[in-house]
Image (cartoon, rainbow, N blue to C red):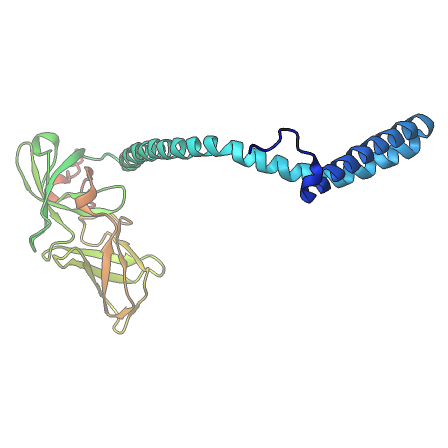
Length: 293
């Protein structure tokens, strides 16, 4: 037998409770609405206080629900931003790599510019330099240390003339051809340069070792103490090298003999200045003419 279409709630106690609660809630809502309406009409300040209380109770819940809504709605944009950030990060990395190459090239150009400017200022300060020439070759793997200049006798270069850069002494000319000159570097074991210590004028001898360093030996008193950082310049003794050209700097503390690092490294130089010898040769000095009788 089919159940009747219109079933009353009395057949189910749960349905009766639900219907009763709905009636109570509806009645309570109507009653609260009526009270609020009368309160807003008869006593507006009290209605404002009640409204503020309800706002304080409802606002945290509404804020939490709004935060949840924003978080859920922001998930698609967050996913899109993640992939966008990855692609943008890759583009920025490529740009940084390209900029790094440009920066390195700019540093090299600035370094070369400083060295060339220093060479030009040195040439302006030196009285009547012979020529400014390019160092086209220098030996670095052999114990003998020579360099080649692209200037020779046709440019006024002759044997015995000192060669220097803006940083310090390089060596002296030993062989000359019409357009080239061979330079004995101060790093060569056969090179000996009279020097003096800058801080007290101590005379010494700077001799090459063939391994990129210079041996500095005391030329006078014994038991001389060399301190790290002691700078030595040419003394002018011997008549070849003009005085006060930077030669080397002491590396470690030592007595009588110390290792030195040259101020000018021919391996990193492009140009050098050839100077006249400090004292000219005897044949180059003209004797005064005899006085007439």
